[in-house]
Image 1 (cartoon, rainbow, N blue to C red):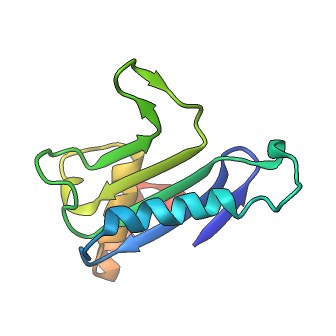
Image 2 (tube, rainbow, N blue to C red):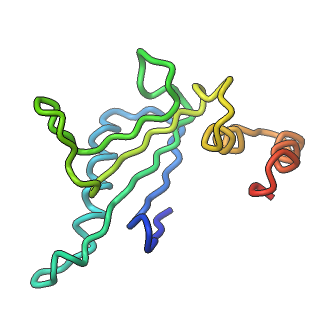
Length: 130
């Protein structure tokens, strides 16, 4: 689902249930494409807004750590300089959400719910989900 906002730019939300080969490249391509598609030849660069991808995975995508949310942006690692926030990819891993009480983790509980009873319990705990 793609949404255009005034405050944050263009946001794409994707739910991924299978760990296909080359998902890294796919996420990069879609995010870069959202950025490029904002302009046409001859238009002013001030028209460009941020392109943000939010990818929710139903599997552990990034192995080796327990963090459920990773935010990737352009960054000069050698000099510790961040590029202006123009392109961003967020990876949210449902299996790693356990034990966290943040708002984002709570929404991952919503995506992980499998029964109506689970949905109703989440709604009772958070009016925003209603």
